[in-house]
Image 1 (cartoon, one colour):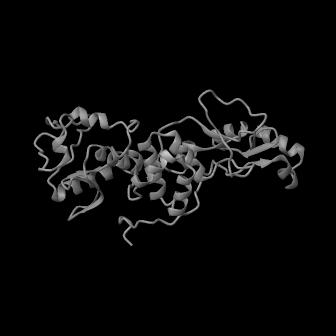
Image 2 (cartoon, helix red, strand yellow; image 1 turned 90 degrees about the vertical axis):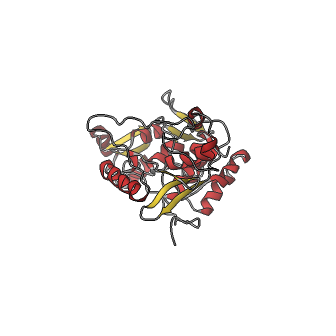
Image 3 (cartoon, helix red, strand yellow; image 1 turned 30 degrees about the vertical axis):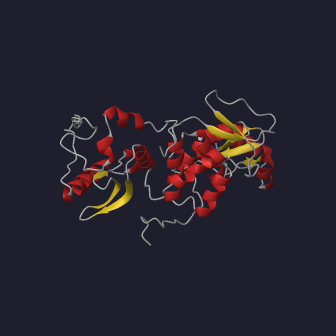
Length: 313
């Protein structure tokens, strides 16, 4: 099956956490049952082999500091904090988002920048993370609509979601959020691609994802059947120079469009923009919604992913 088709249905592997994010903590009783004496535990903590975020709770040395802080506060990393560690696109929020049971007692006071999500969880008492579904539900509520869609697209594209788990996410969301489901597309290969797609839709454009161009290959977005948009980010390419070379080759192969490369040590001049917000010398064909864009400011206003308007507008 072609993974770029509308029938794209990735298999769902178990989320793989980074090595410095242990999925659970060790209790003192558990370590004692394993043969450790109180002196052994004290020595391990003092030498740095073990971390003790709070009384009776232990983590391995080198644990992610935000996991340590969450455990110290009797919480679990959650929302965008967990999703970014699973390589799922999310808003660039470096604050710690953690889930705390609303009935917890003796909760330590976190750093002022920490975002606490007071809610119950299906995760075990010794878990350091919430479930993927819980994290996605919280992230949809925490982020602007467009970014929330990009997060769900990302999780679906990399195979962490399937139809069943996606239904679990939307069943747990308030009714106003459920309309976002019809805007998802698992073919989006990056969060930026989703954001650009939604922005173009808000301008009334027809957008094809992963469109096939003869002698060029697949392109990220084809707008109104004539404009190719490639959504590039250094964060998603191991070798930016190799990717830039490949992009120039693809764009110049059949389209006659050439990438504007900056001189070494300098910056490329931005392309000149016509009165309708398109590059100078490029005229949208009749019927293109881009022809109706009255001014570049209209495009600029649509570029904010945090906009409060509905993403389909």
